[in-house]
Each structure stands twice: as C-alpha cells, then as structure tokens.
Length: 103
Image 1 (cartoon, rainbow, N blue to C red):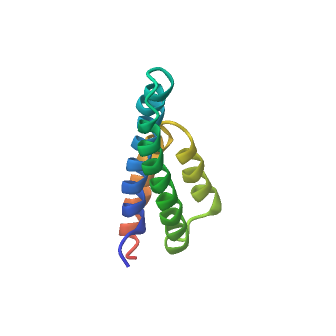
Image 2 (spheres, helix red, strand yellow):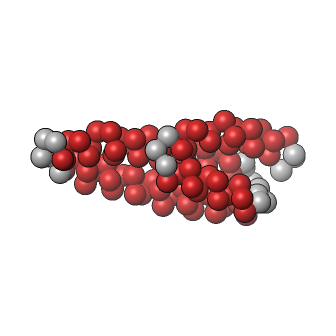
C-alpha cells in the first residue's frame, strides 16, 4: 500500500486553508457586508474536507500503526486555525520515516 501519510498531508493542507478562508474571508463577507453565500460555499467545502481528513486520519492511524496520541494531535490541530499548517512539518517527518521503514 502507498504511504497513507502523503494523502493525509495533502488533505490536511487543503482543509487548513479552507478553514482560514472560512474564518478570514467568508465570515467577514457575511457579517460585515451581508453576503451569506460565501459562508455557504466555503463552509460546505471546508466541511467536506474535514470529513475527508477524518477518514484519511483513521486510515493512516490503522495502516501506519500510529499511537493514539499522534492521531489525536493531528485531529485537534484540524480544529484550530493554522493547526494543520503547524503540524505539517511533523507529518512530513512521519511521512519520511514511514517510507524508510520499508512499508
């Protein structure tokens, strides 16, 4: 099987960016300029990416045999603005380590 951490990193990045767009662009458009359509579109995109991230994280947890604490850290980071971008360097390290293990 291919490295599941590679897919998790990609999804995590896009989920994190969508969260920042939701908070920094769509919500001000809704609450300051009265344009609620932006939240509907970006919110739906972000929600879909979050669900995809959860499934990818579950797959990675199982395939890569991560400890619960590592999977929990990635999940909690997804709940925080800039969280996925912050843990990306750790994901990159674990990704390289997984490739090096011969899996």
